[in-house]
Image 1 (cartoon, rainbow, N blue to C red):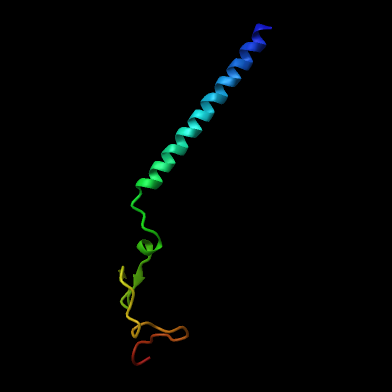
Image 2: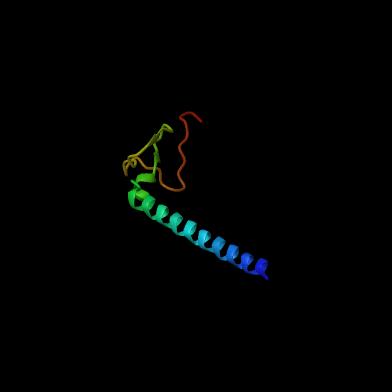
Length: 76
């Protein structure tokens, strides 16, 4: 009989530790979200200029290639 009660005690202790770890993990996750520099989608977008260099500034509207147009080298 004592063995069965000991098992149920161990089972409840494992459950307590599991819930405690889950709660701590959730708190850490919340702290990371609050302290992240983030910024959103605008900070993650990169543009490629006509020379193939990556820039953070969008290309000028008049210099942008329209869909369906292709750049070809002169003489081809």
